[in-house]
Image 1 (cartoon, rainbow, N blue to C red):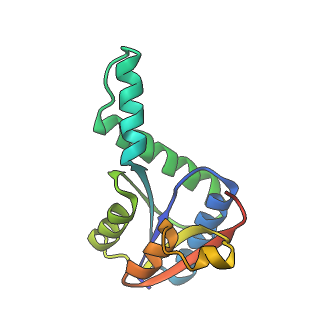
Image 2 (image 1 turned 90 degrees about the vertical axis):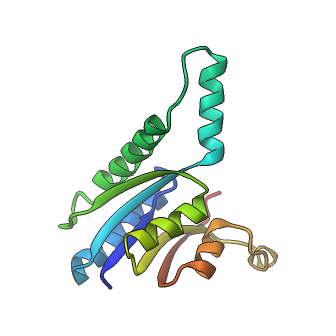
Length: 150
């Protein structure tokens, strides 16, 4: 294991636990740690439309990436305060699955950490959520931190 990419989707306790676990693994193995938050296209479009409607101006891609980076950095600071590990923060705007896989490839990450929800037996049969798609499409190890959160 050389490089770990942690997918940060929000600021929840589950996300902080996920980042902490990845940090402990990175510290213990000497792996490099990358924290990634992708602002989905839909969220970016909503924010831009909202600002245009309120006549407060537009919402640039740079602003969106800055917000995404601040969110990932805040989660990293809180989750890794007691772990002796360095990390890089990466932010992007785009389609979540494609962007995560592209960043993982660009950064040459060989281990992905992502949060997932516990699903009913029928829900497990559906390959519709992001976690399942990443499990199927990432070319490396994937650690999933399961939660009952919705």
